[in-house]
Image 1 (cartoon, helix red, strand yellow):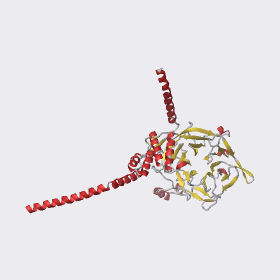
Image 2 (cartoon, rainbow, N blue to C red):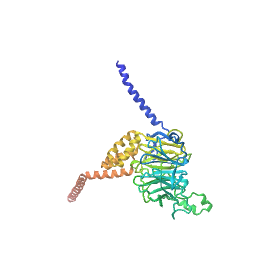
Image 3 (tube, rainbow, N blue to C red):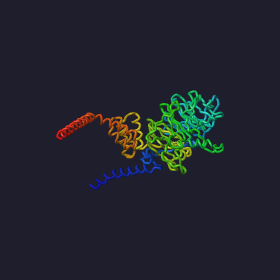
Image 4 (spheres, one colour):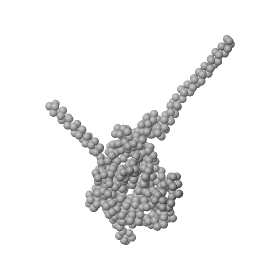
Length: 488
């Protein structure tokens, strides 16, 4: 009887072990690597922050295959908008993307039925107005939620625009004041800005390209034919945009150095983005220039998430990079391939709840990813610190370290919390583990001043005793020396 009871008690334990083993296998048998970079910029493997969830296609939704879709947007009401470029339509899905709310492929334009031609971008404003970058019709179409026309932005004119400029809008975004930002084809001066009436007002975030002295020297002495064969030193091209709740524009661009592929532009068009410990927000830090996927990350889109977190998609290697509001790299996941959960040509990224959505133009699908416990803890810790709740943030970072003891940012997060609380000794300990020179120096100076302040009385007493002792010793020595002279 005892043996039977013992065997019965063992069954739940065996089931628990089996379940935990299968959970570990599902977390480790991913179709892509999950990693980060340490202080020395070496690749360090990490637990998965996100894992593949589902794929949504036009066929599954019953509206026929998407054809070369180019953009994706999640509105405030949770509806998901897809720029189905090859089908000349905008598809609207419900929040869980299980059904189609509506398909927008035509609208009434002053009494005439009008259509789209290769729409490549879509955005929904806070007023629930739909902005569509109608690329091959050379315009941005603005519709109400019911499909009625609000306005059309086309044929921008200005002295700063080149003569004969053709307006081919690719991506569109709108801030809280209804200012419209457009990335246009072959427009290198910056993101085009329009006021709430649709009037062109100038460029935002122009990126200048620096020419080295050697390049300037050789170009000066080159022939006209040689100069034509050389690289054109023109500002780089923007690739994706999003707007945060404060009205700052996040814009991604082509960056062949891997240093900075995203900017946070204020209303004046100035870049105010913060860079973390690595001083880089360009995707992969360590990369080879050779091979099929050689070169820096090609960041094609960005999504601003909650609590200052933002994620970017790398079309070149199919990786998703996520940063906090201070520019620290949080986690990396994703990859190219034919397996479930990998991409062929990822072109747009969005977020809804605890999910990340990626639009793949080649697969003609939306791929979804859900956060793991590891990813959830990091997101929560960053969010708590963003809100100023350092105590709870420390608890989350400590749990992160149990899953990944080598995560330097967790140590830095704990160190910063101790620094804010005035516990400089513990701050030094964790900031050293996090390899944060700047913050460690601050903690060290504060701790040094703290020690000096606490022991100032003893130090002054010691100095006085030392001075008095030296003085007494000197007098005694002089006195003895004088007596010897008298005896002589």
